[in-house]
Image 1 (cartoon, rainbow, N blue to C red):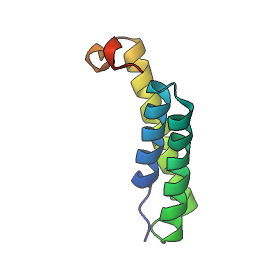
Image 2: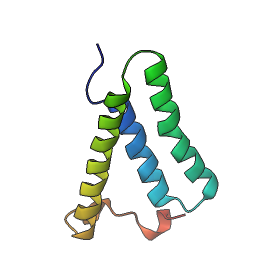
Image 3: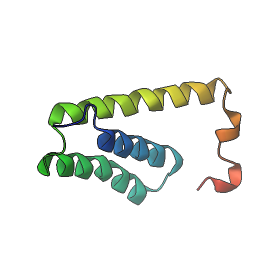
Length: 88
């Protein structure tokens, strides 16, 4: 049976969001977008998850990204902000 939600999809979507946010490079952003697409196709093709599991996982990642963004904006987690030297 498939697990609900798909944490494979959630991790891939959250990682893609993080790469998108910190990287201005187009090549990395393209790879970041492809990661969740390939992951979702893979877990569905191997029978590990259904489409609904992947959608729920993506929604979970969206909620996590929203929460992190709100926390950073409110300076609740300033220690997680990237130093200027690490921004590309």
